[in-house]
Amino acid sequence: MNQKVSSRIASLAVSQTLAMAQKSRELQAQGIDVINLSVGEPDFPTPDHIKEAAKKAIDNNFSYYSPVPGYKDLRDAISAKFKRENNLDFTPEQIVVSCGAKHSIANVLACVVDKDDEVIIPAPFWVSYIEMVKLADGKSVIIDAGIDQDFKVTPQQLEAAITPKTRAFLFSSPSNPTGSLYSREELKALADVFAKHENIIIISDEIYEHINYVGKHESIAQFENLKDRVVVVNGVSKGYAMTGWRIGYIGAPLWISKACEKLQGQVTSGVCSIAQKASVAALNESLAPTLEMKKAFLRRRNLVLEKARQIKGMKANEPGGAFYVFPDISSFFGKSDGSMVINNCDDMSLYLLKEAFVATVAGSAFGDNNCIRFSYATSDEILEKAMDRIKAALEKLK
Ligand code: PMP
Ligand code: GLU
Image (tube, rainbow, N blue to C red; front, top):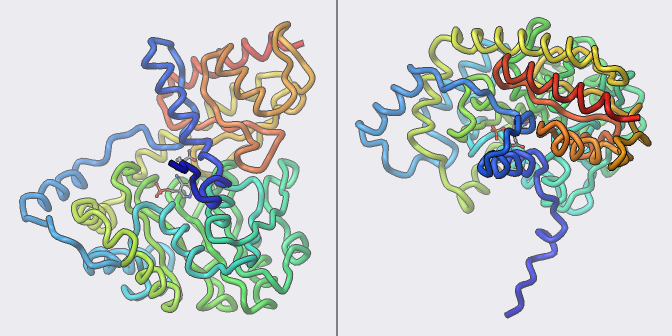
């Protein structure tokens, strides 16, 4: 039997965030006290009123195939959310609900990118972006934005990266892995560059919208000069502690939402009916539980940041959102604890797992080889313990 997988899949990288999470689960199952700061997901339970809505949906027999783009009441709730929270106008027909924002992004790329089309992605980027572009037969064009520019690209860098083959721009703000946020002015400056290039679609991943410690969420879709070419990606995973429910969505120009609906009609059909009904409750009802979670995330960010800054050689920016700290650890490169030399961020991630029993994700997964990512979506006690262990392990490096 020829067991060769397709070259499409053979060339695909494994998701490093999920791989590290799996590795730490395996070590924990062996009885090893590993602290998992790898995967980014809220540690809180889904709020009760959302769970109740799901239970009711089961009792009310929402057990049949749902419409491919999502139930109308959910798309109405999303449309109202866009208006209420972002002042954006997306009709229910411009909205497609998918199996998480991850699926939404993959759908959009599959629908707009042709072979060898270029997709500009600022680095650090979320791990799955470039692999999804690959699956769509496109070419990622990376713009590097290091810690000194708070991991954000400038309009000049953007302009220089645009070519006649550029089809899309894909980014997240608040960002995973850096937690950086583009201000309204910074987004406006990028929008003004795009305004000069009318065939570029902007895919704006706003999944961390509600975990923002700085102020109001700003979307690049707000600018008139980009009308009808921004796809806003969002979902309930992060803001409502619903990662396992798998609900993400887009608000998009009609031609893109229709294309995604067509694709989804052949590949997945409408997503889980019960999770959709739970998401209606999430979006239509109070944001109070979200705000409570945000408070806890802010406290934890401060805790991790304070501890990180006490570690000699670790350089960390203050992330304005999401639940990650992404410190630069390059000053440790070339150092050793006597048995292992740290040559790069992958070595550092491995060293911290072996020596401190803390699972992290190397910056290389996100296109930044100088950094390492800590997810602080876990309890204060665990974070304190993790940071103390990291400090002790790094102090051994000479
Ligand atoms: N975008 C970013 C930046 C993320 O961090 C995540 C988290 N996995 C996603 C999209 C996908 O989220 P989900 O599929 O759970 O909605
Ligand atoms: N967004 C999370 C992370 O980056 C979840 C894992 C994933 O889907 O990649 O850790």
